Length: 151
Image (cartoon, rainbow, N blue to C red; front, side, top):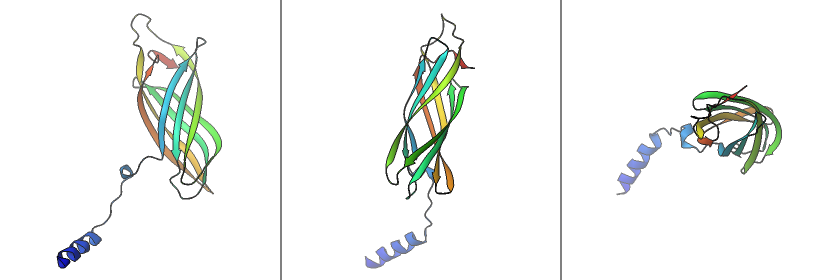
């Protein structure tokens, strides 16, 4: 029994450990996303991100970049500059609002009530002199987003 255990340990110690990015939870998760539309052909994209520091040292969130696709079509892109602390070992909630200028192309009689939305982007974090991008991706259904196009 002892020999079998030692043999199993010897085999396991020779087996290389392979880690993939998919083996770890993402550092950034989209908690919520909403598109608010006004009558004046303006809109606001509200995004709530949970950012977890992947390093063992504190960092500073310096910005967020995003691309938004509605119904498979590129709808909007944006960048925002920030200076928000990101503590080591603790998640941080980040509320972002992106102003949008819109052009309404709804066919009033046939427009569906919403559209599939695909949001992808990067949260930029500075660790001392090194800046690192933490990616995020989110898919959802946005009510009231059908037939809109960004200017």
